[in-house]
Length: 139
Image (cartoon, rainbow, N blue to C red; front, side, top):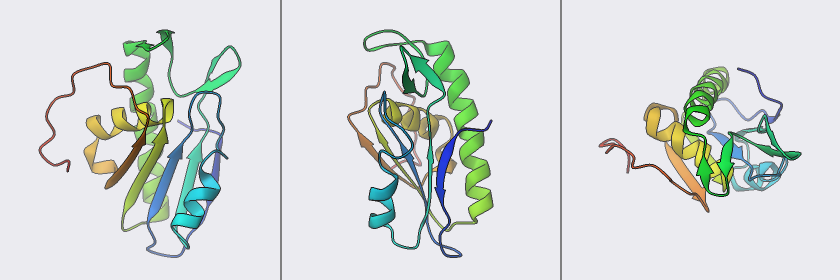
């Protein structure tokens, strides 16, 4: 899966940070902020590819606060594949994910399904409408 994304190439071996915008945001929402937080780091910021009345999102919902769980599962798998490809290309020592609102939700879903993809999470204003299975490897 490919996304429209903003990328900053970092120094060899530097951490890779992913940023995920909230509903209606773009790949620019947190990209520059994370560049400042991790000087010399790799930064990848995908744009959500779902449109909700013109607002970019990472997955569909059926109402306010009500997720389309089938769509979330499909888009979680797509995002995990995208993140794995980006991680492999960057050859980073550490992977960090920062997400806000809808971006925090897709990031949390990826991290729960694929805990090997992200070492550190920053989830700002997430909503978790499911009961996640215990993940002994997550801190």
